[in-house]
Length: 448
Image (cartoon, rainbow, N blue to C red):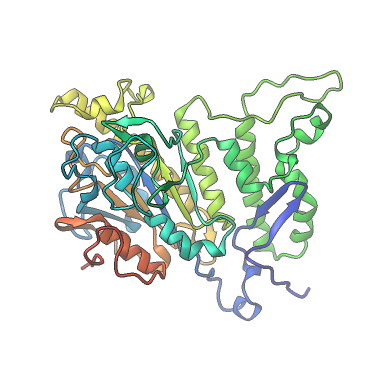
């Protein structure tokens, strides 16, 4: 059978759905298939932010260089040690007060991806700067359905006073399209699923009673005819990849509705609306969002993402790990040993979720490599020690291979007060952005 080449942008379509495809060998030019299974350049950037700093004594590795050992908080990342770099010495000067008094949490949230010093206001006259993800999206987003996706576990706000006279827009948004326009994040897993796999038509959000049968269909049911046609044209390896991908899509969708009690009508058909809202359990909420992050990247729906584990200054407790007190309250530990132990527990818990995402990305093949091999994943906070509210020596790690452009795995210690934006400028250059300045950068980082 003559092999048919398919487009990287091809989708499985049906009534109201458009399901992007994972990378398949059939997407390569025919002349390359015999000698290479290398996926095309699909360089990706993902930025994850945690609030309230870290327990730095348990975060920072004791040794420097490539032979460093993971610190207690970073231990969950052991599986990815060969693609993991820890950065010490980076500073977020824009988060410093500079005469504006209190508000370190709002400033650290606003500055984390911009490097800017936000204007102190709780009115409509907010002022920040474009964020690094949006600069990257301008370069990478033209190749995908979504230029970027902004995600998180707590809702965004665009007004109100959240921290010492600073607008809630600063503490609840990482991404900024420009100085005055923060990009709200999606926190509802069902809404995110519909956004990634829907076309905006009614089939994914049916409300009328006459559409009960349609309502109970999976998105895959709508596109199954298209999927079967494609399967018949693929080789054995690609058929298996497509099967695994579609199984993962259906599994996530099933988890979105799992646990809902179905009301059965007289016609024997479940009579209930498509579920919406966030799961009650934080752990399942986080896992669902990360599952969909991996699916979106696998389908090449986007190559740029941001994710906030919680809004800056969040006082959420974590009773599920023995830290029921508010996170922010615990971060002001005053050197109390018990509080510091609980902060370390929270920090480690968050890192286990990063490890979960990296595991997913490492399990998804793209040619001879994996999705993680083609990504740079930044994780960290704009505050170092939450008790001191300092913004130097930030807890920052990078994971992934970056399509061969990532630095060698090591613990890098940079000169005191090296701008965090020096790292971002270096990353932008790896993405093909020709710029000599970003935020308060002074140069690009060098990795010796």
